[in-house]
Length: 264
Length: 240
Image (cartoon, rainbow over all chains, first blue to last red; front, side):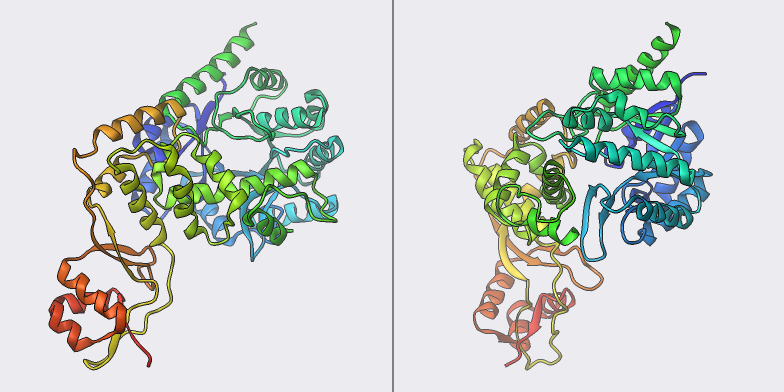
């Protein structure tokens, strides 16, 4: 079976993006950016859903925050019903409190049991399968890195929550912390994966996932290695330096790499 | 911790050290602060300052600005950013500056204001409502603004699009026209920039200076214009 490879849908890129996404085998949609009450939004995603496999990927459930965002959860449920999709993913982190909507991803700092309790509550609130993605930690501290990945993997197993493995974030975590990629990857040996994220990052003073570049060879190699063990949908993330043509080329390149590797 | 992140990120200064007792590693803390600052940058573009998508190193300049100016009041950031950017940008006839001024107004006008104290009778003394102001822009810049991409594009494409934008500039200096700047309130939270004629502008200038009665304004600008100003909450009763 051909690999499910696609990209994240950027609404701001309009019809050319929708047309491109309709040719991918899969594509990722941020449910909170689309309004089910808006006829054009509904038509756009329903049409897309007829030709490709949509993955719902939220940015703002605030999984490890004080309480999941009610309006976001409602919207996820609406799109889940409309499109017949039973899985939504978000990040293993928190992004704000009632008074401070930071809008940025902050790794958990609580004890693992408390974090697990939060995941359980969100899973129940969402009402469909919840998947959790590793964020980029930008941390030079190997212990902090290892603990984060260990916590995500353990909670994934304990709560039957699959992981959306972001391989660019994992590569950057290894780069920043000095840990090997294999060591970080080993945390996920027993974990069910619901997808892979790949992206490219600009190099600067800080190790950051900037989502504005092509996928570097190191991340692509990591994808090929992981894909051999566990295949799952692959999504190319591009949030900045947007160009429909470049995104198209990159998704094709990733798909071709996986196909070629499978033939070896 | 959320409060500490907001405080550190939105205060002027270099990316700070984590506060005492913070369990996050230093580099993680600083990456979070940077991301929080960049949220303000992204917000400015979404709110209308699209020119930033075309200007080289705009995000780097923004991060440098954040080391000198606080970001707490996000509506004041675009003007400060433009002041720090414009000297390094070639703009011989002033059109980039004119576009930036318009786009900054588009951002500023989104700042919600309190419900204005609407006039009730002809003898009420009125002035511009709080947050409403008289300003100027070059109308052509609104058309040019529409040509600028709403999203981040690759640097090479940005350079090409900036060159194309320059070719669309009229072969004349920008000519500013009177605008009434009306921030959002109630059911129209996004606010409006309304072109006004000289008659309305001069009446409102008098109202700004010392207040005029509703009847006086009506006499100067006509009842239809007066009614429009009241409906959009541009004038408010002075409590004296």
